Amino acid sequence: KAGVTQTPRYLIKTRGQQVTLSCSPISGHRSVSWYQQTPGQGLQFLFEYFSETQRNKGNFPGRFSGRQFSNSRSEMNVSTLELGDSALYLCASSSRTSGGAADTQYFGPGTRLTVL
Amino acid sequence: AQSVTQLGSHVSVSEGALVLLRCNYSSSVPPYLFWYVQYPNQGLQLLLKYTSAATLVKGINGFEAEFKKSETSFHLTKPSAHMRDAAEYFCAVKGNTDKLIFGTGTRLQVFP
Image (spheres, rainbow over the protein chains, first blue to last red):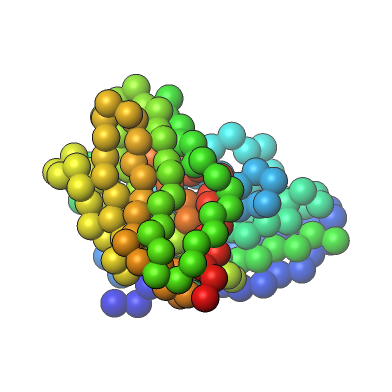
């Protein structure tokens, strides 16, 4: 089975722009979660989608949004980029077969976003 | 609320020595605990997870972890370090929601 794929792998944007990141989960997985990784804040949960519905949301401003399509692929959008948004954005998928909490999340390689 | 604390942001060992990476958790509900490894410029790879089936959990690459409720710990060990084990290791907890709460990570260096 192919793993979680994320595109693009690297992205450079300037302040004020917006960006869209894409994530394709493992085939058959219906849950997709997004995390931000920075040297200062570590790994932080952004949000989780399951069957096209946002199930959980982390503590990020409204500039961060996401969606999930009927084929379980997910996109994350960040509007009005700030320097502090520079980070590695990781997507993870899980099958959600055991009610959620015990499920393993499988991570993609991430998208490295640099905001200038 | 759940949280994890990883003691030691950097750990250095010689090749062949014991690896011990420490993780303590806080959870108001029975926790699910995970160890992930991250190699440079890559995503996170699951090493092992605890889901209450057994307190001693064996994972990939020779790693294992023991869940100790009395100590609220889930330390990661490997009897003999290899150069390829050099990476960053993250402990994570899930409670009754689906989001992973990560520790700050421990960077493992292995010297020949």
